[in-house]
Image (tube, rainbow over all chains, first blue to last red):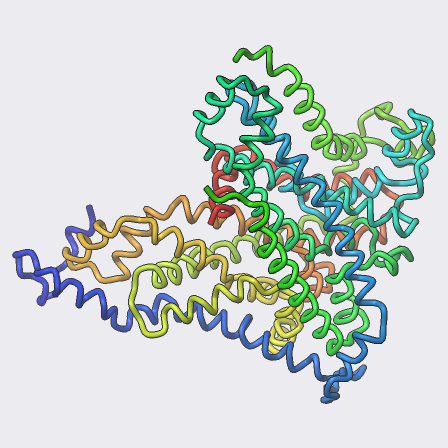
Length: 316
Length: 271
């Protein structure tokens, strides 16, 4: 090994094993080394993350002129928040989207339970296929979904027509447009959820199933009384991740609906509204307010989930 | 339990897999059709002949190659930067003693929980004042530093035994040598998990590059595709060919190393 051939510094050349306290003292004082190790990282974190938090807080109190002049306006932007209905509307849209995506969680629980059946053939192949949507570039895959959701020559309405249903103009009708985006979000999230849930399933001792089977429990009973209760920590984790990711809805909306589609006015998510205000309207003061609203909303939603977990999550 | 009892499971899983695969298949079929076939009513399931020339059109009509190159470059720089900075910082947080270590790490953890929009306007102002708008440096700069990379690597290093480090240290290796020659090779699973997440995030990222790169020649693929739909909305086959080519590198890498990708994501998800 290379390390053994390194030149020994004079002080450590004593061949006898050093006493334990001396070694501990060496570990306590790492000297200047930590600076080398975390220094570059912390400089970047300070410049691109810590300072921006403060600056965003300050920007939320400013008004941006069309030619770049920034003036302090106090709480004016925050007052706008309570008078104009853009933010509540965007919040509602985002929550609806999240609720649609969360429908994927029970589906993922069911599918991962099937995938983890003992001696199931081809389970790796299934897993691969379920996982592909999660890897696809959202913008790229959104383009085909746009085509599929087309009201006239889209394959989804063609499929519905087989059953005598006349599908709506998905992407030009306000409510349906959000549903369409939600369906794509759900489709993309299932594979990731399955991976996390499968890791949780592997942690359930097989003896529990054997014991349940000996007691005459059917597969359905085993699913509801062994699998689901023991999987609740993973389900909780998946819910939290899906909600946090759901609040970030932007790419799919931008690519499926798009800036030029008038429906976007009724379908904006919080992040889309942030982008629109900050970089299209160039009202960065109000943009900063929206960013801080997103922070608050995500924090509250996560806190509520952690509060509620005591009622339904089993930690063994 | 025999395979026969899994019959219904297979039915459900096959239907599910088809739903997952269908959009990709539809994308492929569309990319080989003519626009008239794509927009015909009733719809055409299979094109009368396969039009591979749509793929050539992607390279002729769109700045596809330059955007592809930009995507590759920003992904490489971002991920390598994250790996190096994250591993070094994570190692220091896990194994070194220095004043304020735990307080600093708590701050890093707190950043992890803040939505990216809170940083974005200010990051834009910084990049702009550096003159980095419409440059690779501007697209890459904030994303090299991620709280997540330090967090993940710290978790990983905490799980490694200390004896090896002790041995190397007794042999006179300085802390950097211990880190570089002993710990980093052992941290390979953690690094590959971080790389998987970093590649996905960087390759697919839209909002940040959309904001800082406004010239088509300077944009990565994600931005190029997102802004493309307005201009070439009528030519679906070419659009689908471009979209499929944009997803292809990630999908191919995944199919080659799927075990590692899945393990990596499961690992990071469990932390």
